[in-house]
Image (cartoon, rainbow, N blue to C red; front, top):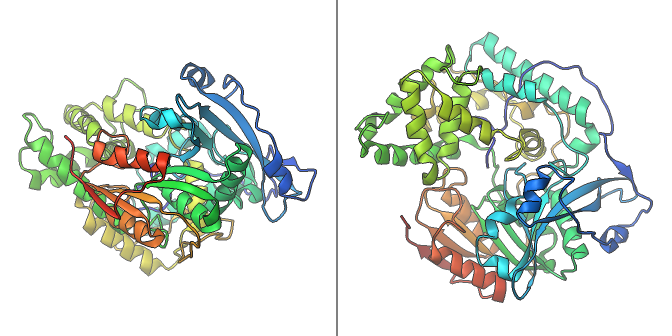
Length: 503
């Protein structure tokens, strides 16, 4: 769930662009048949990853790559097609089958994800399959809304002016961003990058890989994809693990519970920092929110100096702090970064913000396109203002103190494509027992969402006592061993398994 701001359901992008009502994006190809069977019967050709993005690194890591053809619009299988990029880390031992994966996002780059799972014993039993979902990375056609220069300009814009003029400017920037998405991607592509389309792609990929039923591992937003696959194809699933669970009946972008979760994560970090000599937030954890604001608020008007000529602005500073709260292993970046800010420098937080905003991690354009297809579009200004007020109250560490009682509509209010797939109550007839993993202090996908997901799917729930985002493969044998045993032998853990914190 990277790429989003705490008080917004979608990223904000600046710079104007002309509206162009293109009906098709580039790189779509025509299908010669009107039947889905042709897609299910295609043969996948594995080969070198050399021609893919970061291909040399993928090759050196032992991955193979391929592409699979899918219909752009499943209601028109004889129409335009998309090419979905795959990677494969072949099983080292007795192979059970393929394990299709998704790292989250939406918009998380998928081809490198098998390398994370390859560090576990899953690599002995499964071909680990990474997937750049439609619109993303090496898959075509891509969702393209912003150039690198436009993304950097957005990051440099603090976007904290909630005066009437500031709100009007922000909303115009949202309109311009949506227009650029149409101009550069096309309405048809933007209409077909949603979770349900991706779920159908995964079923085709399962079939062409030769697996009679799906083995799936999804993290974060990948749990929303997993529950959608379970709804559409419950009888075609062998095993499913969902780590960092999202309630399938709730909006991903609801800012208030996420703001509260990040506030709790910040408080946990602040207590840890306060016990260390030289903590930039001081020795009193209760005063840490004010100490943070005293360090970062001046960046709104004057960026901190960095070796890079851009300097560290407010957005990048907050992005660096929030991103490091995803895992205690990254907390050192906050401590070092804020210490630098107190000395007038910003190199550490800018470097981390660059990493987290890199298209090698998550594609912000895809993130926005998916959420705007599936989230509630709030156009009632009173509701938006109330969400802003409650989000600020829930997360004082992230409140810039410039509230006016009003707030801009987010970019989805201006999205040119109708909502396609809203969270809803679903049935899952014939779905085998799945496994949901949820962390008590997860800031990005709060624990209640994982509990709700397990309840909805009638799945086994593994609860890990920790503060990081996701728990599998993070050093807890209590989590890892039952997950691996389940995927290999279809022996799910008890309906509720509690795993203690591992330092």
